[in-house]
Length: 219
Image 1: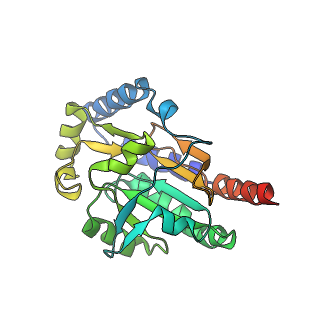
Image 2: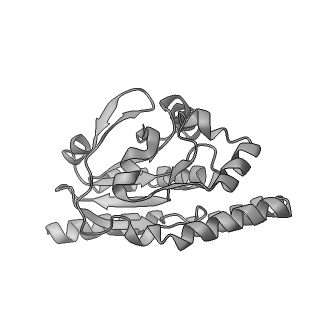
């Protein structure tokens, strides 16, 4: 089953159990975010990737430059451990981690959560790649994928118990769009997936194809 199919099944199951008033708020929030056209203005193929240094779940400082020194980088942004769609997408990348590293690339995930929360996710999912904390979503903003939840949707998330104010260290309204980038060793984005729909994510097969294209270009 493809990641797309797994995400669709998850979406169907989750939404089947939600009250109508909750679905209405979520649908309004989704429509408002789509109307911003943020995915279209985000960084894409051909743009230089903004450099950054962030703390990992274990407290290690990891820079994009250090990762690029070892090869191409697959950089994926996710909303947080509270998001089941993020967890599913990260598990799918974990399942293809050996395929990514076999192509000489490094995989790294970034969320706005504090390191303690990222560590919980890393342990739970047994991820073999670094999970970095972009508190305040400063890096996500530089990639053009950060947005603020509406007051209505933010209040709903509070009601659902996501506690974003705590896990995001006070930046409870700012989140990144689902986004995955393939960055070559020169620091240029060669492939990008960005979507305003939180239930849609990059297919691992497409990430691998983008890495293969890098090898063909070098050859």
